[in-house]
Length: 195
Image 1 (cartoon, rainbow, N blue to C red):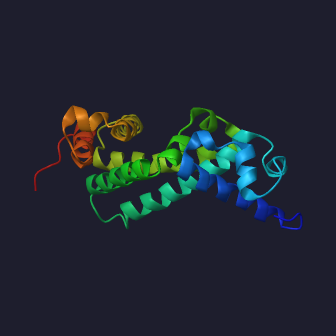
Image 2: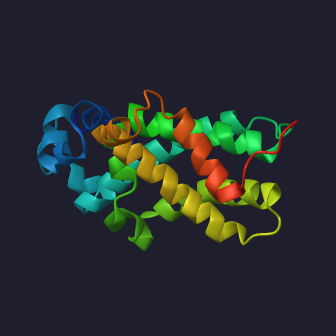
């Protein structure tokens, strides 16, 4: 990278390299030095755009939230399906994303990043949670949708994590997470009504 490269170009390149690195080697590989090396710049260059390591990690995580958000919008579709069907599709997308992008998923839900108010991750993660709350509220207008959505999200997060480790396959004998997703939805929303 030359010094004449537009500043936004270098910033984007650093984030691109971070996204590639987390996909290949996981969140633990995301050091400023390694990102700079792979971007072909001095190890101090990232500091011009990202004064702290957390700010660079946050920018990388935002890319993950953008991708997950795009997938979630695709899963929910035009909203003509029942709320339960939309929640099933959303849950499947969430679990697939977590399992296919384990390094990014781990980075996205790091507590230290989410709690850093000036990094803007709340602007990317909370709207996704809002979609979940809305769908739960439409599926179960008789409950506190935020609490049930929070419990459902925690359940999905646990399924993703335990599935990645192989624990659920061993404990349940399942070879696919879909029955677990259906059980989670039944547990939080009640059994699906028979047609």
